Length: 139
Image 1 (tube, helix red, strand yellow):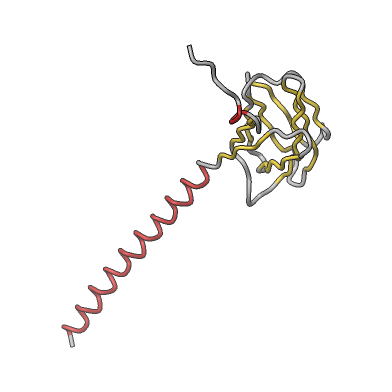
Image 2 (cartoon, helix red, strand yellow):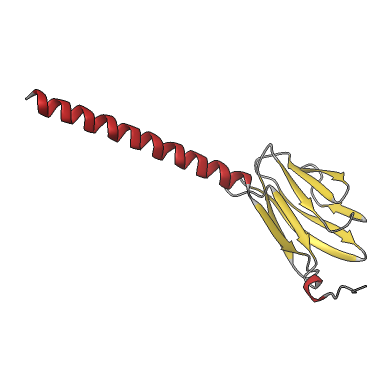
């Protein structure tokens, strides 16, 4: 009977080690997903792109060049800070929603800023939809 008890205890010890390792793996995977949330959005004048901002966190919107002008719809819902080619957006409430227009070289990029607890953007790269068609001169 003691042999069965030893086998059972050894089995339980190994099971607990595997469960612990699996839990650590899941935690590491979740952390890496949260840190790598970057999205590319095309600046299309006829389309409003959604940007999800987590409450009490900042989302960075990066542009290929420094924005000329920015218009924020709900000034009491989000804050906007300018850092070179970036715009830092922070939600002031857990249920904020408004629009944001950014002007670049005479073009207008439109965004819907939405506060979200589950799905949120850490970094948005805004690109020109025609940049893949641009030809680079060879010297």
